[in-house]
Image: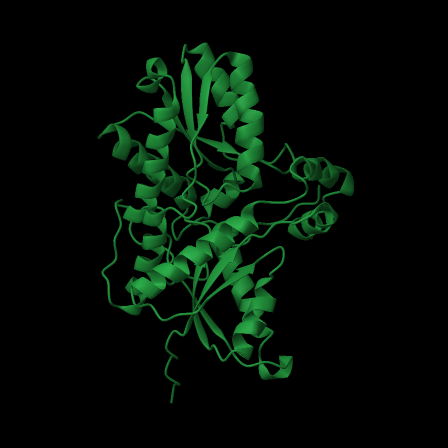
Length: 352
């Protein structure tokens, strides 16, 4: 006879993690790139981005702020789930958090990953992290069993769209009035290898489709149905012979300048918070590119701990608990509920 599934008794915010001081930067980068054959010389170049900001990634503080807001929201909406934070690549590691949860008597946690869309790195790999953390808690591993259930993707959830649309409106309001209405809306997401996109989702290509849908929904929320926008990419890494999604944000800014565009509003809707890749790639590199081109440039904020996004996460929890219907704004369908094993497989690694 099959054992009944235990009721949900906790909530885990699962994220990427980031260093919190100069001494942690290289160990963090080595962990992120483990198994990929990336030499320390290349990692040292990336480390300079972190050291430019004191060796501290803002992602940890932002996740802690989101978790604090969620605890308040949960209490206000009668969600009696203690909330925890765990990371893939830095403290607090998800395995350590799982041990704490098990020691405190938790047995089944709902999990929100800080990635709104499908892909290996944005979904399947987080599922692997959860499976590994749970496996460490088997009796032979010296701990109590703990189950994890990952919440679905939320790229088109009304609250996520509302938070990003509000940030876009605020950014446009900061532009010179002469540029505000004509500013080109440019949305960015983390580039991935085209092969990873081709295997994202049950039928492939879902990462790109979901990122485009988020951009469309935000653009139309602000400028009406049929609003023009561009979806481009940032934060590419990897050997040049491996094709990744493009165009890159900086190349696109150059093309816009040639086409006579005078102002751009750049919205990183493919990211949940203003972590280091956002502030380096956009606030530093893309802003400098725009200045060189004479483009008026405004960078739009991310969802972060915006009240609409915090409310959306509570909605996702209540949806999984069966007390709220699913809400989505696109026609792509709900995704990330019960992913088949063939969905978003791990990419084949090539030595660099």
